[in-house]
Image 1 (cartoon, rainbow, N blue to C red):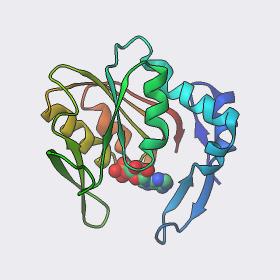
Image 2: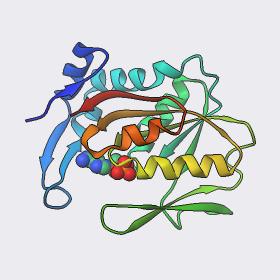
Image 3: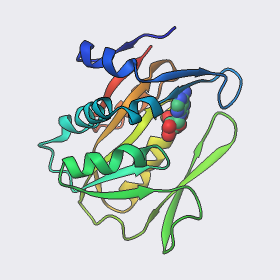
Image 4: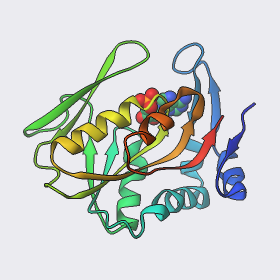
Length: 185
Ligand code: AMP
């Protein structure tokens, strides 16, 4: 049904076996990659976090910025692994004090991400994390938010990339390294 590749084919096979493909969710024509089986399997969850954090071990990361909602499932673990802080990038109206916002395009309509204005300091080194990169619109908005606060985006880390949607190539053109554990073609 699908094929995933990775720099480590055995790791890819183990993790791919724990990702459920759900056709026509949340809307017709979308093949949803459900990571909940991976999360409930202790060994797979640990391997996934380790693989997402490892490329940035020596990158001097100050903070991991996780994208709501599923970036909150991996970001804090990556942050602990890298001895970095965690910063949530949230959907509109959730943050209690002064925030900045970025709008971005979805397949149908637009969406918005927000960050507390005091969440990052100038020149702090930030890693942006999420579960899936599809079109890259969400991650690009996260990049703009971090940059507007003066932080340096040192990289992106995703569990999986959906290559036909083009987001990986789009993000790679921004400059910082983009690391994915699994790539679906
Ligand atoms: P995008 O902005 O298009 O890169 O979409 C990325 C966001 O949408 C991520 O936060 C993903 O969690 C979610 N997403 C998009 N497509 C899928 C998919 N096919 N399966 C699971 N999650 C997806």
